[in-house]
Image (cartoon, rainbow, N blue to C red):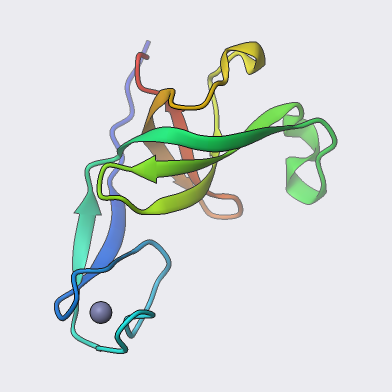
Length: 114
Ligand SMILES: [Zn+2]
């Protein structure tokens, strides 16, 4: 099995230390525009999730899939799709890691054990 190591890029506020995933030009917390690019470790846990049975748009062909809020090691929560997982094995607190960034869907994660 090949392993794709992708960088999960975000930003970190130099003023208050807040992490951001979305492209931002100023900090949503303190308003500072002093942001540095930050590469997330990419490891996290499923904080909460739902199994999507009926997709829409470009996701129609992916169903069923796991839509999860992943809590990163940095403490940030991001909405992601978890791929390469058996639906019935999806569970809260499961260790996951960043797999790739999808242009349309956003960050994609996969189980950390793979
Ligand atoms: Zn800030």
